[in-house]
Image 1 (cartoon, rainbow, N blue to C red):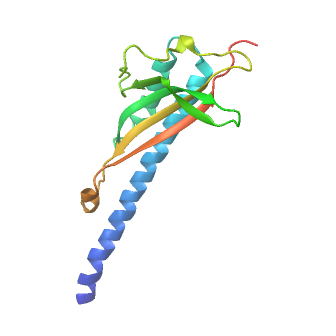
Image 2 (image 1 turned 90 degrees about the vertical axis):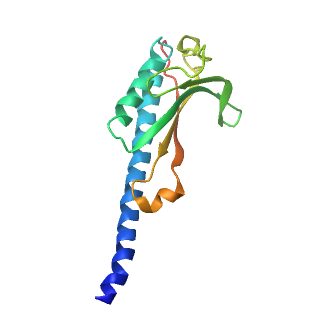
Image 3 (image 1 turned 90 degrees about the horizontal axis):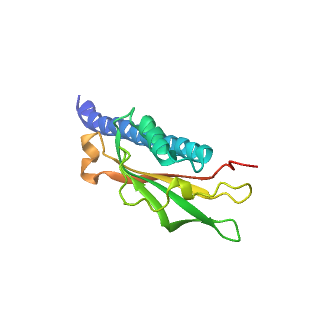
Amino acid sequence: MTEFALVVPVLLLLIMGVLDGALLMFSVGTARYATAEGSRIASTLGNAATTDTQVVQVIRDNVGTTRLFDVTEIDIYKLNQDGNGNLTPDPTYYNRYALDGTAMTSPVPWPPAQRNVGNGTSDFVGITVNFTYTWKAGFFAPLGPIRTTAVSYVRLEPQSY
């Protein structure tokens, strides 16, 4: 009986850690999938007036099905390409939205109508979903919530050839 009393707390801690780790990985996967779907929609719609609204809606639809984490911000921004093909965010063209679609900056610095969708010259767009995961098992609560991001880059599809 003594062995049981010594092993059970360690076993429970291990099981709770595995379960909480699995929920964290599921949350990361869900956020990455939502971000990729949002960038796919942004690429397809290009410079349509409702592009950002539809991107946020797709992300909301994908992450809204789970209550495991909280989305704090959705960023849609222009990427600049250097001579080596590296992409870097352009800080002047950076749209920030809440999960409900409310713009966090007014006016929006990079409205969809200003996006270049020309053949061979189209813009690159980046989408970042910032989210917070709160530990579900009480053992890890002292570690505090985990704040992380999911990022996706894509080139806008040409709207004319």
